[in-house]
Image 1 (tube, rainbow, N blue to C red):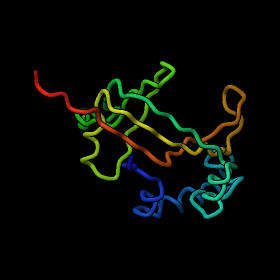
Image 2 (cartoon, rainbow, N blue to C red):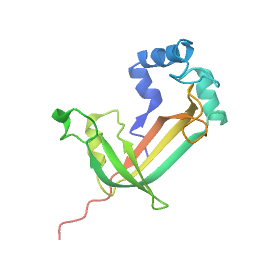
Image 3 (cartoon, helix red, strand yellow):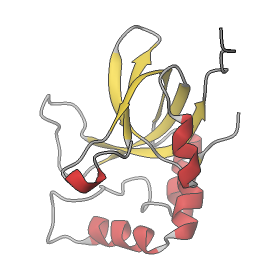
Length: 154
């Protein structure tokens, strides 16, 4: 299965994103905004090595799309799909955003499609989370989507 999104490729297309995230981490005048940077600045060699070594934990979710929808406030874009509800193997659901490099890949996100999302769980400056746990940003590292096989007409 080939990824339809990787953070590495997205950052290569928009390197200013790295600079903005790193700048916010380093900005001591914003102590509750941005990543903590305990295991390296966002997208630095140290950060990627920390993910590979498990110092920054990852989370993988896999499931089947139940529905797709538009999320957001711009009603002019309401007919465009940018989100989906994913039914996980344990029966629970979660809402996710669609990430692709190519616009035409959005059409892969249909009910019944299998999706896998891999996240880095990097600590935020603002601690703790509302429930007392470690507050993390869920950063999409990779996304995969496999549409279900087409059924022949009856």
